[in-house]
Length: 640
Image 1: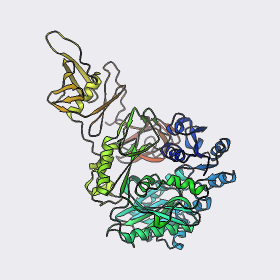
Image 2: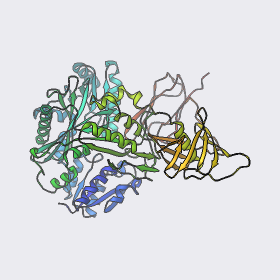
Image 3: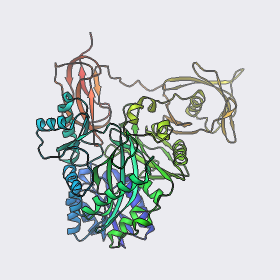
């Protein structure tokens, strides 16, 4: 076993590797950028080395700086985590050339699976079923359009490099192919430095089922499947293991195909073979096809650990240090069911835009596993993926595990940034998902229901008003001649009045609602005779009430000047990012829905559309400009 390893990553995966290394008696070295000086993974590690600026290209993608840090600290091996350099074969070669061990597969294995077209050809030779499509080298747009016609619409355009839904577009109509191709190639070029794409037949009721494999360079085993069908824009949202409705016959067929794939490239370490499954007629052993192999540990690996009792990071360290596979196939069994929900800082009602902010409060349910790279007080920055945590639960049956997930999400508390927590909770309660009737289109079909945010109840609003006037701890002292003490309390969207009758007894008058009678007892506030059970967190003017979700309020300072509000003709940047492209010029006429610009933020492209018909009066930001949230990009002429 190694004495010391360096983790070439950040966030929750770096923390995850550090924790297993510590349990095995292995010292850990963290690397960090300017933006991560006080990050949780830096605090957890035994040592930490600064490697550059906040942008990934200046820090976590600098293989030379990471290798130098490993050598300087006496590390024997480098664990890549996932993302960044984890699937970069050149980095693997450089690590080994420096006399270090790469905790993962060989560079040749990564190369074999790194390009989807070549990987599919390899899998065909290995006897692994692949999706019908065009995987050739000819990237001429007319040739690709012809290939799409041959395959038959609908089709998927997919970047041959990378993953995570980047460089992927579904096309239903031949007339939309050229625009979708241009968009997919542009996103792929930015994300992976390679604009090449392939064309695949789109499966009408697809399920995304992947198999965890593990090899030692000679033989491989599988640790069963995960269902990752609950996706939005090809990004996984909730994963589970095992897959609902899976038959013994199909599990055996998929497991054997995944092992053949791993052994075909002499795979070493943890990997995932991803399959697309046609679920239109249930799960059948002849209705699954190879999509790609991720030659690294996956974000969703904890659900596999939960049902098998295996620590996959421990296996990674043991195999990389020279041990054989820790178990045979017949030693591995499924116990119960597990779910993982990805908690992100993102503005769901605004279209799931990535969000930033300082986490003023962060708490997880006591009976769940929460893999996180942040703590209360940490900042979600625009430089990296906005994941806050992965919430993982396990139970003896799928129904019990899902109920535990719903409860764990209800008990999770985040303040300081908007999150997708309510959206995750709605998914956990979705009747179709509860019944196991899930495919990759479920979220899109029911999106309006899933993103609906219920308004706070009068009782919740009353608690926010009490917090705004500092009455959380029962401060109600005061006096007035002939009448109760009364005060007006303005919140954003709410104008309330508080009347203090006695210490710990107040009435909150709200517009359109009956007065809320609030009394403070030893166990907290009671509103209208009912114990609230809510938790309240305040940070400056921000007030968060946790009661059936997080309800956020903003206290208004009556002395503050009103902020400048942009007119309807301005298109504003919804988040900090890079202006990737501008499609309009001064004097150009546009109609509602026309593309104005593309903003690249947190590794995704966001197309900004015209909100109304008009004529472009000003172009205020050009391609290549880095802009802050709220920056004016395009101005239309005033309407007559």
